[in-house]
Each structure stands twice: as C-alpha cells, then as structure tokens.
Length: 282
Ligand code: AMP
Image 1: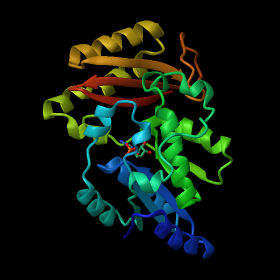
Image 2: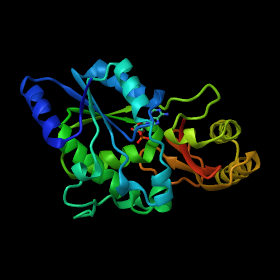
Image 3: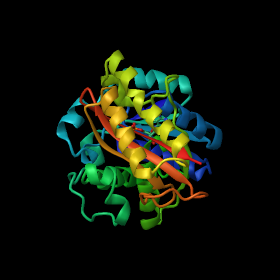
C-alpha cells in the first residue's frame, strides 16, 4: 500500500492511473478502523482496479468540539488493517492540506429537507461539513465509484444529494451495516465505551428489532415512546431520537402504511458517547 499525505503527490499518481483507464474505488473514513470499514474496502476491491482509502478526522463536521477532540485515533493499527485488507492507496492528509484556504465554507450546499431533521436537527452544520469534506476528497481522488456504509443512513442520502447538486461523475455504492455478534453496530466510537457500556448499548439494536416486529400491530408513536423508555431503562443517558421514516424520503411517518419501505433511525448517548444506528423495516 502506498501512503500519500499531500494532494499533489496523490494527484500525480492517480491521474496517471486514470489515463491508463484504471477504475478507482474510494472509501473515505475518519480512521479507528473496524470490520465495517474493511467490508467497504473489500467491496471496492471486487468492483474497482485500484482501491483508495482516506483517513481524515474532518474538523468541519463536528458541531461538538469535545467530540472532535475525543475522536479515537489508531493510525498505526489502521495502516496494518488496510495492508492486510489489500488496500492499494491510503490518503492521510493534514487539515492544512485539505483546507489550504481555511475551513470556512464558501457556499452552503442546498440540502433542503434532509438537513432539517434527525442528525441535521441535532447536529447543526454537521452535514455541511460532511459535504464539504467529501466534495473536496472526490475532487482529489476522482474515483469512478464511492463506497459508503448504510450505518450512516442519512449521510448516504445527503452525499447522494450533494453528488446530484454538483453533478459529480461518480457512482455511489452502499454497503450493509456490520454488527458485533450482540447486534451492536460497529463504530469507531464504540472504542470509547466500557465493556459494560457495550453490553448495554445492544439495547439500540433490540429496540429497533422490537419496532420492526411490532410495527403492524402497535401505534407508531406509542412504539417510539416505548423504545425510548427501553433505552433509558437499559442505561442510556439520553435519547436524541427514535424515528420511523419513509426509507426513500426520510419523512417521519405517524401511522403505519403497508407496502411502504420504512427505516427506523436512532441516536442516543451512553457513557457520554453518542451512538447512531438504523434498521430497514419491510
Ligand atoms: P467513519 O469512519 O465513521 O466516518 O465511516 C467511514 C465509512 O464507513 C462511512 O461510509 C460509514 O458509513 C462506514 N461505516 C461505519 N461503520 C460501519 C459499519 N458498522 N458497517 C458498515 N459500514 C460502516
């Protein structure tokens, strides 16, 4: 695996590969890698000639500075995992390399409704920062295929919208959420949890499963309320939301409509760590 730290050096090598008609697959990450990230690398290796991974903890997407400062960094281990996974290129830029003109966003992305609810509501500015960094990374790596995880369901929709707004020539492929045997979704943030915290955090998966199994029989709002209570009882400090939404538009539903594709999305705090997860229903 070749590691690049500057835009110029990676650009030189990748533009040569593009001229040779090599298909470039790209997996952007913030590091502290786990099997969820590696499954995206694996997918890219199957579908592209060259797999590029980036590790960059993007300051502009953190609305909470403490969360940014506490974000886990395990770069040596990440490099070993990527080598083992057969990743071809790792891009490891500094903040200055990514934002030579500063981090201020010149023009906000018109994300519309998507930015007004769930993560958009609870993390103001977060998705603008996500679009800013992904847009910049895509302009540097110029991949034909971009691999993202459904674990960040709303983020996938936002990036898809940004790609459409900017008319970027890249195909988006979504990978399924990888979970621990317990059901807990793999996340870099899990590293900040105690063993007990990890056990308690399985309540997110259980509450989503409960909703999935009872959506046809119980009132939507009562189900959401019951699930919030389940999380608090299981040891969560607070719950930002448990929402049942239309899987295509993300509009929250208030009554169950058979035949509509739905997704349940959760964000909640445990041991001071904010976890998010989602599950497709029917
Ligand atoms: P992150 O490093 O958290 O920014 O994530 C980088 C990419 O990995 C994003 O596209 C995430 O959606 C994806 N990802 C994170 N966790 C998982 C998981 N448990 N399963 C599959 N993909 C994931």
